[in-house]
Length: 212
Figure 1 (tube, rainbow, N blue to C red):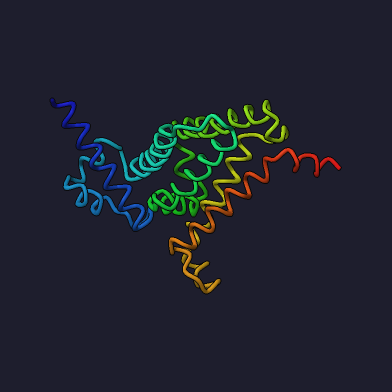
Figure 2: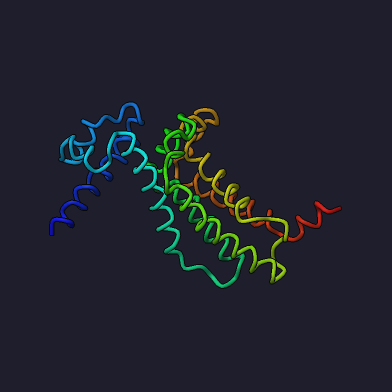
């Protein structure tokens, strides 16, 4: 019972930290704000996480863990191209539906990855996402549906870039382009564009074109 209560306290602090850091950034996300949001005490943060930095690192690890857990729940189609389409939809929509994921990554990039670089678990989270794409590529290549000169890593970076940039820059881009990129219609158009771009990229026709 005591262990369950301790885990609940830790989880509550971590959940509150993600919200506070996402709203105020690392500098503005004080221990006091987090403990208040968690309805806990400052000393409990130091007890479970050692420091504010330790808590921020744990928050970054948790948002990556959530992404992997959500992706692992996907039930992919047997057809490689349909399955790839599902993965692209998932990634692009995850950025849109998980604003805290985007804002925390924005905050950490301002520090040039200083905190996540100290994580002992960070590298655990990239292999599963890339492995899924590697498996889809292999199936697609075996069936003659996808080009053979791509890697899951490259494909992941491509999809992540297209999904992340749109979401993280939607406010400035809306002002620059003179349209509301947050509207459902604008997002649906971009999502469709990303899917089309990825499917064209993996097509064997593209590989033949590059070879000529």
